Length: 215
Image 1 (spheres, helix red, strand yellow):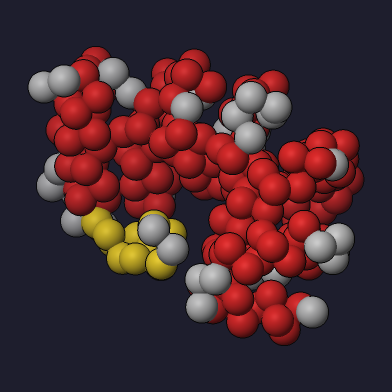
Image 2 (cartoon, rainbow, N blue to C red; image 1 turned 90 degrees about the vertical axis):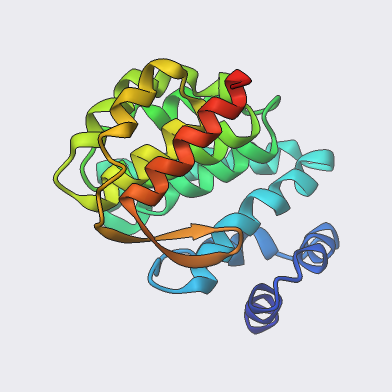
């Protein structure tokens, strides 16, 4: 089953994954087991698929998704060690795909932003949720702003990308300062791992904010 799931992820056959999950198979659990090595494309697609599959499962077994959310939150905490480092991204995908049922989880995800080992994952989660329902994470904008000046290019880039999806005109001046930042990072975007400069992500964020404001 795990090899079949890997094949479906490799070929981006998400509809078949969703159908497989509705058959009662343990697709959800197996997807989570594939998310730990974020150097691989399969892991990122598994993270995205966790959200897509959760939407299908929540139609008939919402308690299963709620229990999984509880498990992922537990995995983030100290007692679980390092195995919870992909939990913020998975939680973000679950909230993104089930905004009405799991709106209460969004502020909990944001609360882990200042945890060094989780900051990147939380920024990714905020951006993904914000792309679907910005109001759920709008309150995080002031918390994200300091990350635009972080010495780590990955955090600067992710902060720019995330705030572009939830920010207002007031943050554009901060983003303008990053236009010339040529540091490159790898970001998962539209089903692929892509190399982007921090400046490119800042430029994209500025365009998104201006588009949202009608400029």
